[in-house]
Length: 475
Ligand code: 6MZ
Image (cartoon, rainbow, N blue to C red):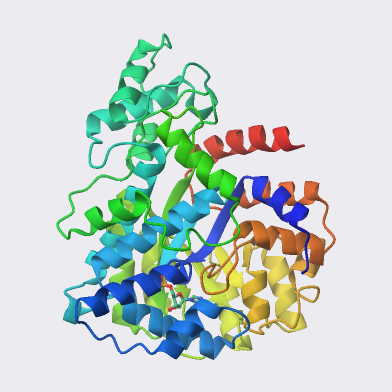
């Protein structure tokens, strides 16, 4: 093992920022099993073999090509809105339990007409799942949030946000609302427009133990798919037989549960979740444009950008450029998977296009590496993913070392925590061990990651305050 349990524990305590996590790659293997079991009990044959199922649950080293075959199997199982919502809810809970305070999740909207699924209904199912998890983390009763409660939540933020102290308001929107109206003696100021927007976009304030609670609701919408109900159930604790994925300390998760039971005396941590919609490299120009238009329409629900991902051996840059330009035109941010395999012409074109962020950049020659450094484009780096898929030969040889030493903006991320059996805390521990970083450097990495998010300036300011307070307590 590269790192000690003590080091992992230190990393679990750091408030962290996750910027590169694929939804279906972050699924708990047990959930795939559960869904498969449920559907076969209902008499549905999904054509997934025992061996394929074992491949998902075993983890370990696998080539990139094998990885993409595995995603196809996962996608063959996750075809209902309820399954998608459940997975999204569980993924949010898992990251929150790993002390991730800002999560930018990404997923590829999928049209599956044979299952009555459009790209839009798929994405709404994801957003339903995220909302359900946030409500559960915040202990707001399902579907109880209203515009009035959002207003009150924003007022509570205006009063002092996560740092404000005072007696804890009870769990639930009603209790939070009365607190915001002054029942706890705290004066109320009017929320700014930005605060209202932040609240309606799913900004959730979850103060630390003994601090005032606020009643922020997730993005609000009517769900006709029934997926929201399934997500509520999932968010309410269907951890599966094996519970959450390994990594997050059990204390954190159980602390969170007991906090919910005891009226938030031990409150969960703040987590803000945003969504990026991915264009799959298998998609043509029209399909890519459809995803971008969907992302543009769903900005009010927390979609902040577009990603280009998928099998790097497939497709060519020119086919997505129109859609990516449209994304930029619509005010969406763009991040691109680049150089996961050797593809110098494509990486050159991507660097010239200047996305807001890049992912991977494992296979760059000296000239492209120099261009990347000169560009100062923030880079999402996924150590375990890159080593297990053999995009880089070993942890110590990972390009993180060179870029970090050069002062290039880098962010540690998980990529596919379910498929690769990792957590963000574990990625921090691996980095510390492989590159001999002191814990103070990890704190600094977490701090800086926040600056590369696609969050609004208001959200960044909130998170900065929270992270500073939590990091100061650790230092
Ligand atoms: C490129 C990847 C990836 O979108 O169904 N994906 N794309 N490189 C990687 N490195 C290992 N890992 C995941 O999540 C799964 C999808 O994310 C992309 C692939 O397109 C995969 O099908 P969603 O939620």
